[in-house]
Image 1 (cartoon, helix red, strand yellow):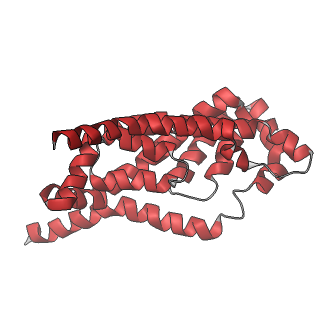
Image 2 (cartoon, rainbow, N blue to C red; image 1 turned 90 degrees about the vertical axis):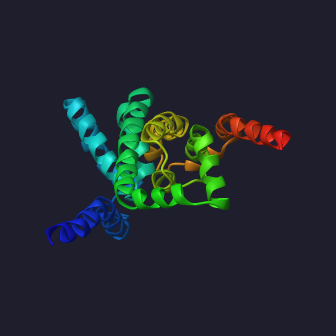
Image 3 (cartoon, rainbow, N blue to C red; image 1 turned 135 degrees about the horizontal axis):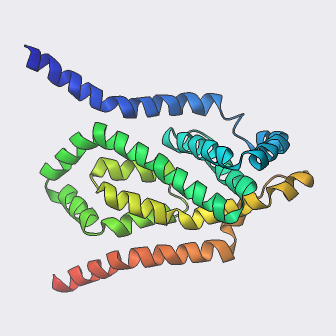
Length: 243
């Protein structure tokens, strides 16, 4: 009797972390959109800079913690947070803090999904045949390349790149490595924009996020995408020759 009642509870408990993330994300989407903005940063910049100058490492820890929460719960304002890192800490330290926080937050989503839906879905994929089996095997053979592409291609939402790998059973180690390395190019760009926010605010302008799509920025990122996709293409061509 106790065994039959404990099993469903354990099954439900596995889903709690992911359900909490989804619930907080939904609430945050409707309630925090007006707070995590450039206007909020502009209005409070003097206080933030004063606190940073007086308590640098306390500010750094607080910033990283807030950024982790934003990413882990998919709250609005991740781009603003990345630029804030550059505004407060400069290009090098800001990029390090941004990449570290985003990697930890992404890992939290991955693990929550893996402990919940991921386990049952991965088991189903392992038992599947036909086209699903080919897709699963293709992903396993090119896991690193696919994960890098998810991080490098600018059109893939960050939340999707965190959730999908967990649901299809990729290795956490590969997810962690490709996340930490794959988000560096975009992280540098957003941090770089943030470094110049003070001047933008002084001129009464709005930060120009379109810089990401300038040829000298998007070109190298697309080049990295090609390099990441190259092993997949080579394996596919070899497979066709063997056939």
